[in-house]
Amino acid sequence: MNVSREVVVIGGGIGGLTAAALLTKVGFSVTVLEASREWGGCAGKFNRGKYTFPVGATLGMGFEQGGVHERILRFLGLDVEVQKLSTVMDVHFPHRTLTYYQNRQAHIAYLQKEFKGYENNIMSFYKEVEQIALEVRKLMAHLPILPPKTFAEWRKLVAALEFSSLRLIPHFPQTFSALLKKHGLQGEKDFVHFIDGQLIDSMQTTSASCSLVLACLALDIYHEGAFYVKGGLYQVAEVLQMYIEDYGGKTLKGREAVRIERKDNRWVIHDHRNNAYDAFHVVCNVPIQNLSTILDKDMYMKLTPKLRAKAKLPQWGTYTMYLAIKEEDLPSKLSLFQQILLSEQGVMTEGEHIFVSVSHPNDERRAPQGYRTITASTHIDLTKWQTREAYDQRKKIMEKKMITGIKTLIPHIERAIHQISGAPMAWERFTSRAHGGVGGFPQTLEHALFNSLSHRSGINGLWLCGDTIFPGAGTIGASVSGYHVFQSITEHKYTI
Image (cartoon, rainbow, N blue to C red; front, side):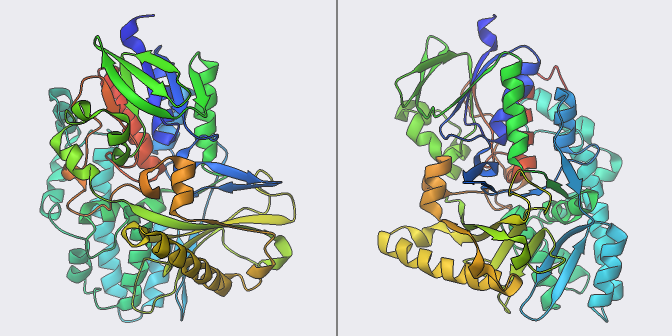
């Protein structure tokens, strides 16, 4: 084995496993170290008796023809069982319920009926959203690396540009609120609240501060395809892990990397069991906030200034509840995905916005016949959870608020067989993420696109992927960041 083809991947989340599987495919010697006992990171799972609970991410995107997951899985010859959704989700306000339809035309027609007097505004609004998203998708089809750092990366970006791409230029410095205002929709409170519900889940922020370009893509992507993944999104992680093992790589759970050091132009990675792993390349599938704990001070200071500056910024957190319930205790015709918006004023955090995922009645990977599992989550501001007193108090408040919110959707929720809470400390313990932060950075103008972080750390042979690296949050973003690492290590010799 050529020593330059030895790679250690730290972290068995979607990004790290994607990079590892792709590198294994083309003949690299790969070892993956995962601190926990499960694969998938924030898209992992845990079990309680006969029930399986997806930890975080639940709604599947990118499995459509040409989607990121579909392309990667096809390149590797793998498959994951998914079901395309015609109804993406139901969105429950205190005073009404709206439905998000996968079919673009049906969705627009439905919203025109729901928002009388705004029919023309909604048509023109979604037409422009679609046009902008189309231009972004044409660019993203080439999976360009942002921000480009090398000649090869610039060349790939320029090659992806078309004349119509120039339409995007005026929108780069704008937030999504500008588009709402342009089409006269900024004053329709429920419509803005509805839009913000989608953006907070995918972009970690709302229309007032979200990058206009990325917001259009986020809103339009549901119409390309939204999917229920049988078992959960951890299935993606597990098929990648099995592929790595089947083709000669090593995947080790319960191996927390505690120190990375440089020796004779090689890397030595030490785990918490005093094992050492030698490699030419190290791929860190960990949040950038964790890097200061595994690199010594001198090495850490060699990271790019931009990377070190962003590593000081806090991430969002999440408060999650996991429940198991009998089928008979659920309302009939309950959609698999729901949003509950509790605030009449459009507040989106600290329990005012709850995303609920219910297992399919025939998904026995998650629950036995006659039972269903539920994952419900809301965004929280981790800076408000820092003291022990504040933490304990907020945990009690959040649990009560979440149950109250879920009860508006599932009146018999108190009959749940399991009720498990996942507060920040649980996330930190399970995923080894500093302070329990999840979801990367909010895609504001400060963090989006050319202001995002490259997978290049600034140190030769040390690579980064995951939700804090472009293109950011979600399994699609994590997968693309892993692909970028693969591209750079292999010097752009392969495409998917």
